[in-house]
Length: 258
Length: 179
Image (cartoon, rainbow over all chains, first blue to last red; front, side):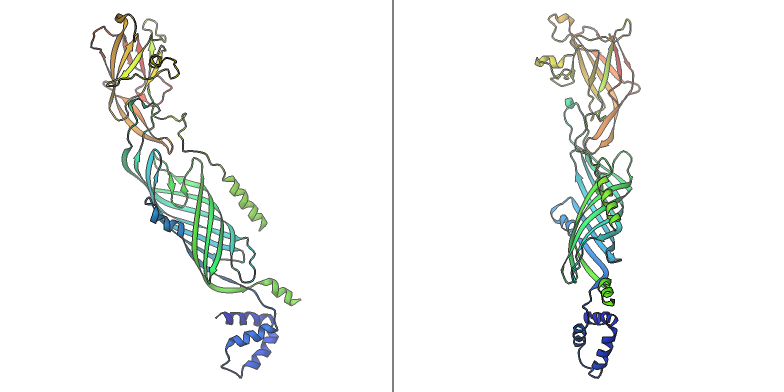
């Protein structure tokens, strides 16, 4: 497969030489195609190609956290599609179930989220490297529910003593939030089509549907909320690249035309 | 391309509006105390009490009115015209003993009145750091019950009125006492 692609690519650049090559090799039918490519390479400029396709991955941080943190269960799937040389369409889809134990509140948040946007690759790859150092933008949306497990009453005057937490069990459902995030990430090809990467995200809430008499303390995908609209995130991914087509790198071709 | 990068970096910096929200700000209105103001019954002007000590039912220590007092016993004594006392957040009533002229060398001047406050309470969410607060509504029919102490020296509180039955903030008077 690989050699076939390269032959095709080279045929267009050095069309005249390949034609002559073809006529020579035609009578010898059983000769493997590798021989042809070798012959071609000798009298044409080596051509760089970029592979285009989709990449699917999973966030290992979320996946493994469930093993050591009994208050957390979650998974995030990632995907990207190479649009141009530098731009990638990117999306993340996740589901989370997290119990947050604050000093005065204990809540469980359950929900799903979807983030979509793009990544821009800042890294200039050498030869056939396919590493990515990117910054990107996402729009995220989450629907979720919260359950208040227990709470404490704040009393500035402890004359009657500090009371134990009140057990509640009250459920707030039908909540939603959306946000914009900026992310910076790295993806490195470790072997074949397997990539490992990590990214950090800075988020700002666009909308936040809060329940009556309570607040959204944790939003799936957005993570912990703060007093303002600010949020942060992190992921550590392993992904698999599925090549769909190849594109020649344009620069060597123009040089050849000269 | 460079422009897009620049825009993204600018957006990233605008995110830096984070604040510390783990500590409950003392200025946040949380569970309010009951505010009682004292008035002169002859001319309805604010009147200072003399050496008043307030002790909760079944409690040994009084409410601290003067945190910075040099003498330990003075912390529990007030000579002002307004006091704030906490209500129980897990009960429907709170009873206090109000002792006027506490520890006076002349035992005849020491006068103790007892008030039981009846109310309903409601817990409302404040914030992550503060948790919940309890607000109170004094009972419509019987907001308080005033009784004399065991040694019948008579009432030093001549009249007690409810000024604000909804106890939500501490910056207003809820109960007016005339003496």
